[in-house]
Image (cartoon, rainbow, N blue to C red):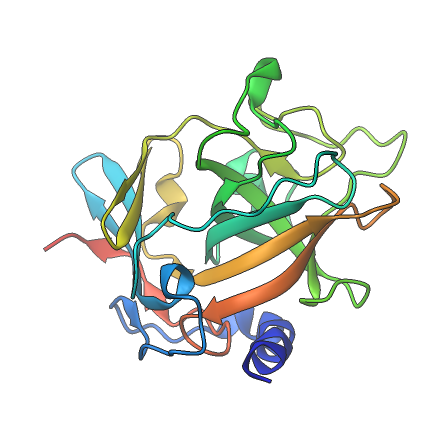
Length: 238
């Protein structure tokens, strides 16, 4: 019931993306024993420190401990992710403007590689920019936006060549105890200053028939705000 409720609030919350409150603070959440400890978000924040933006999520258990089981094939395979939905525009991360909800995601998927330039990353947690949109065909109500056959949208240099609005930059990503951190040069995302954000832990699934939607948010483990209202505000580190 809890996960179904969170999935519903995730969809409903997309309507609030442009109406996040302006209070500048992290997003904190009460622990919930019904959520797997490694995905039970208790705090998420984005701070700036010098010339770097730091995306950080703290959980009740050990961050990154739990990973999806290998399916042995791409179709129907699973992805686990720590996600920071933001108020950024898709044009600010190298795609065409106004394509959907821009989120940074740290993911693990043992059945396929999606690093830039044909690199390997199925064996490690790694970051992506993703653009999300609502889709009722997905169990969690959201999908990574598909690129239709024959379309040639604007994509970043580190786009991995898959038919999705997804980017595969090599940002430093660390897991330390209960916390996952990603560091991004502000020169690459200057618009993050003053942006709004939230925190999500979720499971995604590749379509078993490899048709659109190709990659769905299948199971939302927890939304830090409970409503995807983006109540956090990027602020300088204290």
